[in-house]
Structure formats: structure tokens, C-alpha cells
Length: 136
Image 1 (cartoon, rainbow, N blue to C red):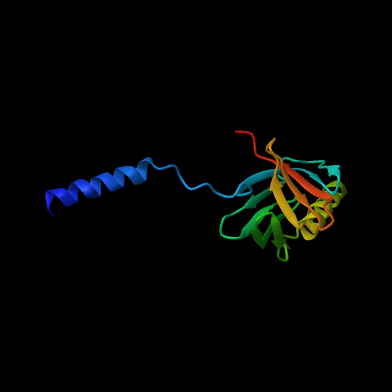
Image 2: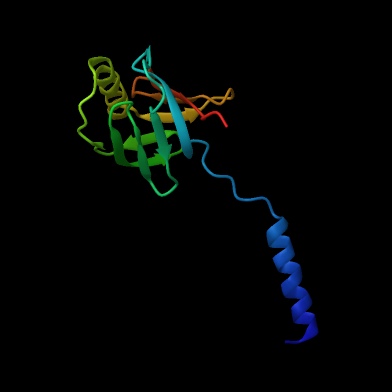
């Protein structure tokens, strides 16, 4: 390889490594569900949502695991049918699960507020779910 080309290639590689990574969508990643359908969650230990960049949503209701496909265009959110495991849980956890699943079914928009809270809202703009990033 000509020395000049080697210098160009090395320079390009250094520039690529120094460039900041392309920003992901603010909703991508893991969230701890704090509130669903206007009520705080009873048990937040396992209640999670994970928005993957490839359009997969996974998580846990506090009772069962969940999976779904989703699309996000701007703040417009569409969540496909949610599949869950069928573990039997105490009544309070089942009620919590119902609120989480209903919130996901109703969600029409998603945004991360300036204070870092994820909000899902229904088509009328009412908040249906709030979540925060997990503690490090």
C-alpha cells in the first residue's frame, strides 16, 4: 500500500473513533415502571420495560414477563399484541399487571420529559404509564 494511502486510512480511522456515537432514541433501553393507569405500582422490584432499537419491547409486569413489537415515529407509539407468561401471582400483583398491560394497550405516544421520566400517553393525551431509568 502506498504510504500516502496508509496515512489517509489511519486518519479516517482516527476521525471515526473520535466522532461521538450517533444518539439513540431517548426511549431506548431499560425503564423501571413507577406508575400505571394513574396509580403507583405496589411492587417495583421486577416491573420493567426495555425498548430495543430493533422494534422489540420486553419487560416484566411484576408478575409475568412480557414481549411485543412496537414502532415509534417521532413521539407516536404503536405497541403490537403483548404476549406474557402465565405465572400465578398474588391478587395485588395481578391487579398491577392488569394496569401495566392496559396502559401498554392504550399507549399512543411516548416521550422522555426533561427530568428523565418516560411518559406514555393515550390518544386523548392522558398519562397511562410513567417510568424511570434503573438506579446504577
